[in-house]
Amino acid sequence: MNVKAQGLLNAALFVREKFGASALERVLAQCSPSTREHALHAIAINWVPFEELAELLRMIDRELGSEDGKLAESIGAASARVNLRHLALRLAFFLARPEFLMRRVAGVWRQYNEAGEMLVLEFTPGRMVAELREMPVTDWIVCASVTGWLNEAGIATGMRHLQTMHAECRGKGATRCLWVLKWSTGVSMAPEAGTG
Image (cartoon, rainbow, N blue to C red; front, side):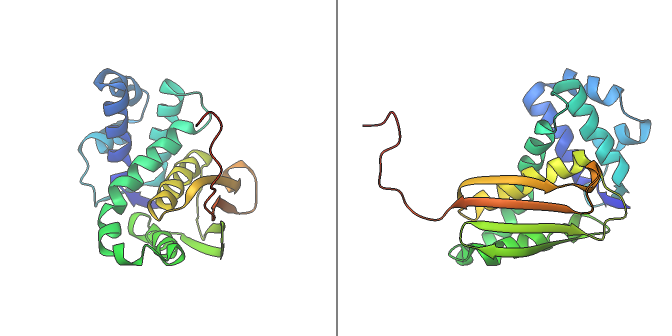
């Protein structure tokens, strides 16, 4: 299975901006020659092997993180900010309808991945459930980046106090990959702790 090289380029840019060029060099030194080349010089719209994205995210997490997937989540969120910029502009007039936007966001999956389909299984006030289906390969570290991507997309649609959980992961032995997003639907008039 292949993914767009944009994912590798976004990950490399994130490391360079947050940790510096020397940190990126350390990470890439641990990667295969092909992953190094694509992370630095690929054309964003070209296809690269899924395994290279997983390898790069894993090495970033190993070299710069805690091997818990949190850096991959941050990379996914940063990628969403870049990739959804144009989508958000075109769909700005639908902002009152976050369900429509999130279904469109899920549909973006096929623009960046050769296989698989992201489906919104449930969308009710304050809760969304999404599933990634038809993936021939998977890796929990890539799923961590998807968690960050979905969370950022939800924030962009106006979901307040959003919590995004990867409830089931094929990369960790589950039979499917499932995300649950929960957010606040009402406006609280009570002051927050520590405020006047």
